[in-house]
Structure formats: structure tokens, C-alpha cells
Amino acid sequence: MEETVAVEAPRADRMPALNALPCQKPRILSPVWGLSESPSRQRRHTLPASEFRCLSPEDAIGVFEIEREAFISVSGNCPLYIDEIRHFLTLCPEMSLGWFEEGRLVAFIIGSLWDQDRLTQESLTLHRPGGHTAHIHVLAVHHTFRQQGKGSVLLWRYLQHLCYQLSVRRAALMCEDFLVPFYQKCGFQTVGPCAVSVGTLSFTELQCPVRGHAFLRRNSGC
Image 1 (cartoon, rainbow, N blue to C red):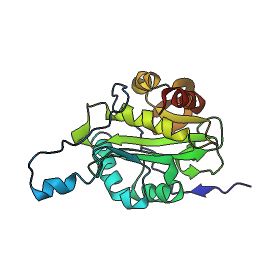
Image 2: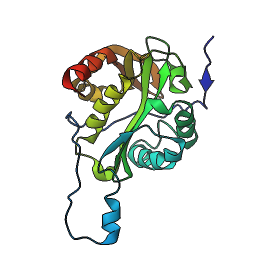
Image 3: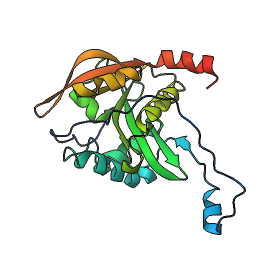
Image 4: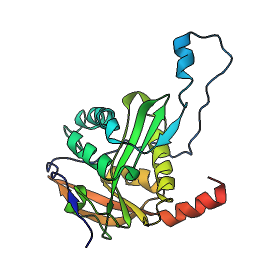
């Protein structure tokens, strides 16, 4: 019997959201070498100009600061609060992905595994090892880096990241109707109304098969 790990259930008025950004493939930025700069600026060049990696519990504060500004300023609540962020990043860090520029976190995704075909209220708070669905809980971009396509780039990279986890067959998320076209452009398909409700809000559930992205990876040299 697979272990079921629960965190404190989120408040009913939490709503997942994501600013719609156009899809585009990622571009690795490179620092300009050979310029006369101060030692402090030269030290910054020792960090990767653009890096994608899984998050750790040590990243939780930076994650929450971005999420709090992105969500509380709009809805008054966050999909995940600091204790839940730490819990998921301790339990399943491989289900997360952060985008860092010169060592600074600029965007992130936090997910967990789910073992049913559709999302339920329990899927908001549980991680079920061995599940075949990657449930995307939250995606957020730092306010100074918005309107640059980073949300869609990070989502694209996250789907590529899932290709290396053999047990994962699909990614799933829920969103409000006005965000459905954004996710469809990023490869997700609508599967119908979501069983999860938050207060008076209802959501659409979308899924994206990971196999298709694995095929894309093999044929693109990624």
C-alpha cells in the first residue's frame, strides 16, 4: 500500500492562477566577457547567466516571496503557504523546477504526484509516490520579469523535465476559464470541469501527455 502524505488542507478561498504569457522556447543567455568591470560585477559572472534546477527547502522563502506578491496582491491568498512549500520541497523536490538568472530565482513551478486519472480536492494537499500524474500546484514569475514569456518557457522546460521521470505519464492542472487558451497553446488539452471548487469559483481541468514531449526531446536533441 503506497504511502499517502498529507499537509494541512488549504483554505477554501485559495485560487490557483497564472498570468497568461505567450509560448516560446527557452533561450540560454550568456554574459558578455572582456569588458572592464569592477570586481563585484566580475564575481557575478561566476554564476550561470540562466539556470533551471529543482528547488530545495532552502529555496522556500524566495519561492513564497514571489508567490505572495503574485497571488495575494490579486486574490488575497496563495495556492501554497510557506509550510506547505517547505513540505512539498522536502518530500518531492524532483516535482519542482526553478528558473534562476545569475543566482536569483525569477520563476518557479511546484508539483506533486497524484495517483488518479482526475484531480480531486485531496490532490491539493497530497503527494502520492508512484502516481502517474504530475499535479502542477502553482507557477509564478517574479514581478520584475513578467511580460517576457518566462511563464510559458518555464512550463515548457518543466514538461521536458518530467520526461526523465519514467513513472510520470501526464501533467495535470486546474485553472479558470480565461486561462484555458494559454495552456492549450502550451500543449495542454481540456478534459472537462474540475471536481475541485474553491469557494464560489469553479475550474477547468487540463492535462498534457508527457510521452509527446519525450518524443519531441528525442527528435530535437534536447
